[in-house]
Amino acid sequence: MNFPINLINMKHILFFVLFFWMFSFCQGSELMAQNKPDELVMLPRDKEIVDDILKQLKTDQKLETGLLVIKVGKLFQETPYVANTLEVGGKEKMVVNLRELDCTTFAENCLALARTIQKENATFNDFVYNLKLIRYHDGIINEYPSRLHYFSDWIFNNDKKALVKSISKDLGDFHFANSINFMSKHPENYPILKNNPDFVKDIAFQESEISKRQTWYIPKNKLPELEYLLHDGDILGITTNMPGMDISHVIIAIHKDGRVHLLHASLKYKKVLISTETLEQYLKTHNSATGVMVARPL
Image 1 (cartoon, rainbow, N blue to C red):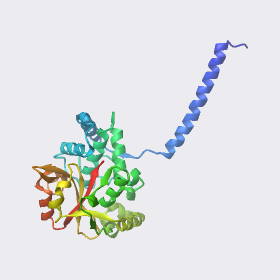
Image 2: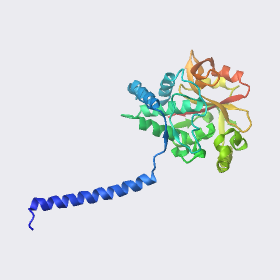
Image 3: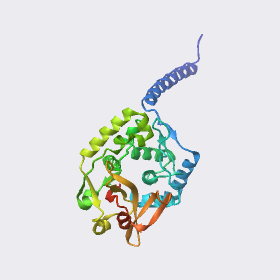
């Protein structure tokens, strides 16, 4: 049977289209298998909060990151303080919860949102990417130990990723005797560690590596003379003398009436707020506080 030439050409075209589609599908399936999406835990309200903030601060895209961190942080004032919002079962998941914040998740979300705002045509997915990059070792979720549990490690890893700069040494060059072991010594305080002994071994190895590093801080008796070097939006860890721990609280530095105050999720007041007391006063009234570690958003 003789086919018209245009029908023959059409059959060839359809064959190559089908072949290309099948090849692409196979390749895409292989890539999907290698890059499985992280399990996302959130509520619709969380996306609404992110979308609203991206819309509100869209015109501030050119601001430096630290100032954006402050703008974002102020929008979270009165948000309830809730601890352990990342613990959602035995398997580590990508948790997005902006309805309830503790001191660390507050700082992480503010930094992630600030970096997202700076991106052209930013989306919720961009925010999730930034948050994961900030929260996990090298931005990769691989069970519970992959989360950056210690603030000194958080600074170290996020400095390596060029998300923040560790500037404590630049500000005063005071060495912090960092001896980390609290989590591995007290796994009963962490349900996931209690139920997964192998994770305790992984955490203990990380603690050993962290403790070997040189770490710096600003002692609280030196803060009055060095406070002027802190910038709005700096993320600070309140260092502690508690055995096995590096810090006891995470805050964002904010200037008010010429002094540094705390923009933070407060355990005492059970919400996000700007403190009435200065950072110097806060350190003086907390006997376990020894000073601050400083991470400057880039």
